[in-house]
Amino acid sequence: MVYNLCMTTFKPFPKIPRYTSNIIVTEKIDGTNASILITKNEGVENSFNMEACSKNRILSPGKDDNFGFAKWVEDNAYELIKLGPGQHYGEWYGQGINRGYGLEERRFALFNVNRWRIPEDNYKLAPGLPNCVEVVPVIGEGEYSDKNLEGLMAYLRRRGSYAVGDYMDPEGIILMHQRSKQLFKKTFDQPKYTLSEMDKELKKVLGDSTDANL
Image 1 (cartoon, rainbow, N blue to C red):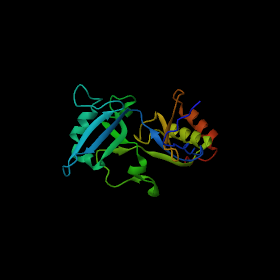
Image 2: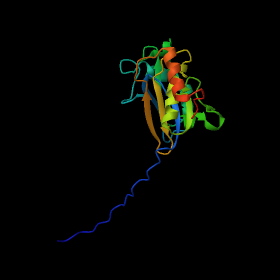
Image 3: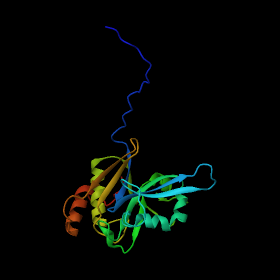
């Protein structure tokens, strides 16, 4: 038997991140996935292309739109260029889209809290954010534990949406696992609770404390 040796590129086994890593928890908004793709025109100074995208395709205003997102991007292009080159993912939500949140308008909330919020300043909005854009609310951070997540879920259910303050039927949360750079979701699968049931759930998880921080 003859073996032929050939030059190959060795690919090491990737490092496995710890499960109990730090996480950032944001509210999961119930709209439709959308993104804004901004690319620079090579060789042309200060010239950029901007495209509106759904989860699976590039959109255009009119029949090939997704709840009017492409038209909104077109109308706000001069402000949205502040996002800079790259693909900027978020949730397009509001009137007529899934929960709707009781809104008469539609809004776009970016997912990237590491870029568009300031962790050192209680996750306040970062400078340079376009005026027509939001960022998903951060509702907790710290080391992962099942109990802390249950507490955050119970508190969110009792408090209502952070994104739309008077809306009392939030969808759930998104976990951003910092070491693995992975996103996970956790939603409210049970029927909507009464206020007394929410209070019992919250007390069961948190005891006498109502501090929902991780």
